[in-house]
Image 1 (cartoon, rainbow, N blue to C red):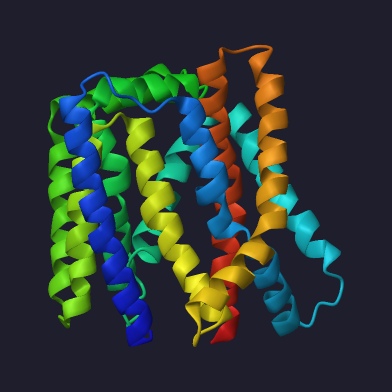
Image 2: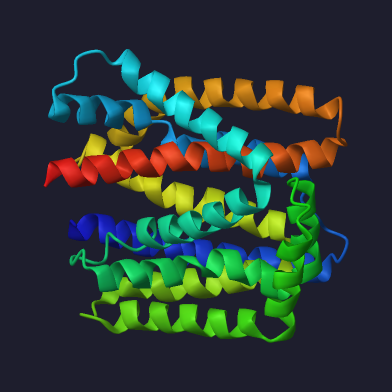
Length: 311
């Protein structure tokens, strides 16, 4: 990966680290300060979703590689996968949640780190997964009861599932898992060390800080929007114009706007339908997490197919 993009990501991680510390101090001083679920949803729709809003461009690139001319197939396939995820969540919510958390951990770890790592070995893939698992483990460790409450709002009513989580929490398995995730970050940081790898250092402590001071939903929103999504957008902007990031941003905004707006419309329609049955905040949580799950799977599959076929 180009040195320029590594430098930009290092600067971004440092700024995010300062932002997390400053914002955490504010919440410590103003103890009643909270970010409403609606604000979290709006941030995810405006900033978070945009990092996948060029999937149609990537799909077009994949179809060119595969020699498929009918691009309508891409949209139908993408939507079908998203719908299947939602249907499976309604049928087997606990299994769907577990699979989503595992896939999300790997996805977060890989996309937040792969620009620093050249070798695409199975060992590195494992390190990516362990590093990304911190996003899942930290809210459970610092705010276990609140995280369980969110799971219950996501239609998870499997008693065995919660007994397993209680076992994990009481036997300090969460703590041991976080230690393992920490070791993976240290290994990635030290392996073939270069100055730009301080990105991993800043990211790790930022995630710990926001999960300590903020609720699980707030911490996830801050991470997903301002670290993960911004980092992915930086890569997309750089790819659009390697010589002029400002022009790349302009092109990215223009290309990303249509699918971002369309996704937001679908989310608000879903929110309206859910509000007839559930409370407003409960409806928002379902839209955020089940909706993200439905978009994450086709997004990751597309990334995998492009990576595989470009070799």
